Amino acid sequence: MFKVRQYTREDELEWNNFVENSKQGTFLFNRSYMDYHADRFHDCSLMVYRKDRLYALLPANKVDTTLYSHQGLTYGGLITNAEATAVGVCEAFLEINKYLYGIGIQHVLYKCMPWIYHRIPAEEDLYALFHVCKARLIHRYIASTIDQTNPIKWRKDRQHGVKSAIKEGLIIERKSKDLGLFWNILTNNLQATYHAKPVHTLEEMTLLTHHFPGNIPLYMARQGDKYLAGVLLYVTSNVVHTQYISATTEGKELHAVDAICHQIIKEDYKDVHFFDFGTSNEDSGDYLNAGLIQQKEGFGARAVCYDQYEWDITEDILTPYFLPTIRKQDD
Image (cartoon, helix red, strand yellow):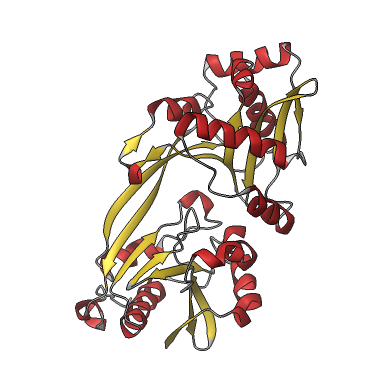
């Protein structure tokens, strides 16, 4: 009933159309986003058909005999549409495992899609991971998210920061075009604080903002002609995510980020269901940056976990007898 095959460039339109109408797809799964760094990854994305109709997608790449939920993406997992059911997804994972076994994949690392990105409930994959794949939870990251339909009051220091920034005459530029200027602030800050670089290069992010102008707005704060801070957003149907936040030393002293976040959260995107500050972990989730997460919690954000699983592709999980028992309701 199910057929699995690898994605090819000729499938781009079909892939993108499915993502657009899926239960949990975002613009990160559009091939124009996924393929901007195609030279870094050996793509092994899968397309799952049921009765010759596309049923699910699995964005992925492979390294030797290991399949990864695409390493170039923050989150991943099986992408399905509203027709996908619990039984169907269990059967789909069985066929995916058979296909992977046939092409020599021995191990899978799987990033789950955080539930806040679901347009409708879509955790059938979590059940299938446990019962069909016998997957193991290996990494758990903690993100900080605001439910805009039931917000928590901002902590006093964050409220004070906004008032102070206004008093100092800071101006917030909505959807700024000064990406290069922000990238200088971001790069210098990351180098000084963490001896690190942004995940994206300026050239890559410029390309992505060109492809998805409505999804990747940049907010900047300035005092006069001096730019002090910026927040680059990833905007999806029900989540606004802070992809990058950075400020100069003076910007930190003047609470520039507080002012930008107030504009975004309280004004421009107040009607979007969730505002997600992202994770505050290092070392595969083992290290929690307490100062960073407490800053995010000061805006009223609370925990949402980003989980990763792994399982081995062995003959033991390739039989239908491995599926959970499914009882049909009596007529």
